[in-house]
Amino acid sequence: MAGDAAMRSGEKGESEGKNGLIAEIEKIYPSGACIQAAVGVPTDRSHVTVVFGPSGAGKSTVLRCIAGLELLSRGRISFNGEIWSDAESGIVVPPQRRLIGYLFQDYALFPHLTVKANVGYGLKGLSRKRYAQRVGEMLRLLQLEDLGDRRPNQLSGGQQQRVALARALVRRPRLLLLDEPLSALDAPMRQSLWWELDKLLREFGIPTVLVTHDWAEALALGDELVVLVAGKVLQVGRPEEVFARPARLEVATAVGVETIAVGRAAKRREGLVELQVGAAHLCAADPGVQADAFYVCIRAEDVTLETGGTSHSSARNHLSGKVVEMTPTDRGVLVVVDAGMRIEALVTRQAVKDLGLRMGDAVIAVVKASAIHLIPHGGSRRFAAHDFS
Ligand code: ADP
Image 1 (cartoon, rainbow, N blue to C red):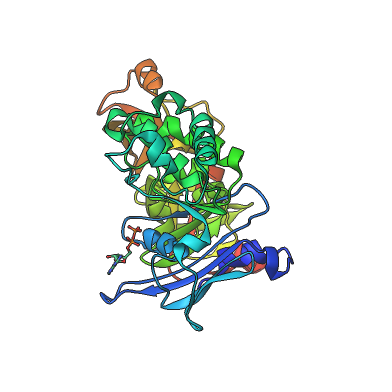
Image 2: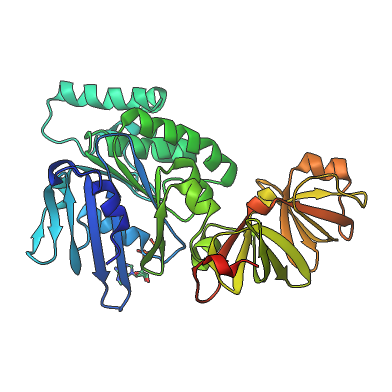
């Protein structure tokens, strides 16, 4: 079973007592779907572990197993040394005793209850005064004080999300589980709420596992990223590192690398690899791995476009071509250039205007060698000195 994430949270030589969440999960559904994942979260500091992957990867299953809503087929889940689930011994601590805050994808607010009642729903056994204090405190912290008497259908999507978060936090959970917390919102709203959610999670300092299929969200909110594809963990690391250096083709695809093409290594020298990609030649930083062919990965943000026939950039790669597609996105305009290979560039709307860019225009796509990430295609082995020629 993949154990990277769990190992990471435990690798600081701590005794098991304070190891945070260590979830080694194997879940086999009667349908045959099998999800294997190891997810860890330290509990001694504010930390968000993001389980990231496409739809159907097994992300919700991981959260449901951690919450105790799903039994494990194999594996074990412990929290600061306390065993929550153990398939072998049959131990299962019921969900309510785990003291977890769970924020569901669709918020699952009760439509007939006010904001106040929704927030206080999980609070049991408190005096009226303590109940009112606790709910009041949450409303204040999440800036919902003026909305306490409204019902969910009288709130914006962002406000509903804050109510759901308040409800998840009101019992002062030991662990927070967020299932696609912003997916119910439209793109511009989502982006503005990332920063708000990030600030809140840091303020509360509750260890969090967040599930998302949106790589920009993972990048904005995660301290550690666990990439789950088709029920298997393919890579674990800091989000920026995984995005810049995906270890496998499936990860590159999942994290939205815009240009992925197969290139043949033609020559290696001075820390660089020269590649033939379609009819284009590229020069990339040498990854130190011997392979005849690589997946060439280039992020659209790392490609600049120039017009006017000659480039003045000192970057290694200048690819002459024609604009064949222009797609406005919420990040800017995605411009596809046919330069003997298909290469995508992300250009700001202002730059599109300044360059007067149109379909069919001749452009030069400029890319630094260091911005090209190579993943060995097929078998690979580490370099020996005589491999360089
Ligand atoms: P994600 O959250 O990444 O979209 P899920 O955890 O919902 O993925 O699903 C992972 C796989 O497990 C899918 O193939 C799905 O069909 C299957 N699955 C999820 N829940 C159940 C269930 N209750 N019964 C049978 N199969 C399920």
